[in-house]
Amino acid sequence: MERLQKVIANSGYTSRRKAEELIKNGQVYVNGELVKELGTKVNPSDEITVEGVTLNKVVNKEYYLLNKPRGYICSLDDEKNRKIVTELINTKERIYPVGRLDYDTTGLLILTNDGELANILMHPSNDIIKTYIAKLEGILTMEEYFKLKEGIVIDGVKCVPKRVKIKKKDNVSNTCMVEISIVEGRNHIVKKLFSKVNHAVIKLKRESYAFLNVKDLKSKEYRELTREEISKLYALKK
Ligand code: URA
Image (tube, rainbow, N blue to C red; front, side, top):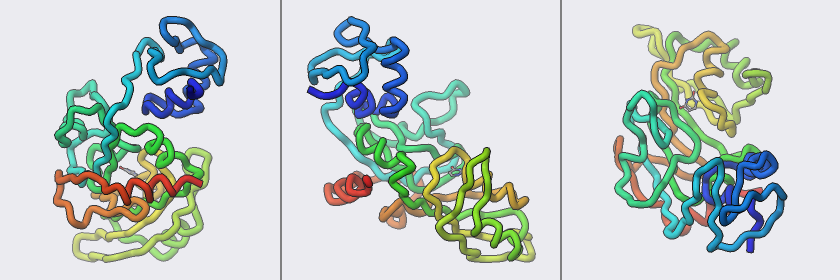
């Protein structure tokens, strides 16, 4: 028997905190009965319905590492009918991306149907470092570089990068390449950081995620994570 909010979070439907809100707000049914009490214990065989959606019981857990190409959205469906990342993975399981990369962002993306791991990876307290390489319009000045290093307030919350490194400056095209490592997972965070120092991001690639990288994968290629990698990801939980 497990606590209802944990089972909902582990299914990948939502976070544990949101699951608790949904339970309190009367949005959760167990075997057809409304349950509003947090901590209610449920069996693996119980039918759980959240906001009218019956949760799938995860049978086979799958874990993929994808080198995401441009032009794919990190969502389960898209009202604009754009291509979605899960189309790139050949599986019958209902997997979903861990966090989001923008439509035009490329690089490392983890996809899984293991909600427990997804929650660990997305929880801010676990301080998981993601490294991006950004091509910027204009050349980052030293003043802007130090502003970024000190941290920048985005939507009222300060984001302090773990590392910022100018990799290349091109005076002819007036662009530069900057590597930036952050623990943040907020949407569009890298673009917002650079926009605060007045540079548009022309290209963005996530190169690494904790100890994982996509050096051996071409664009659109993917592989399954190894057992050892999955255990190492679980061990990132603080
Ligand atoms: N930050 C962004 O701005 N975009 C991404 O896709 C990922 C991080």
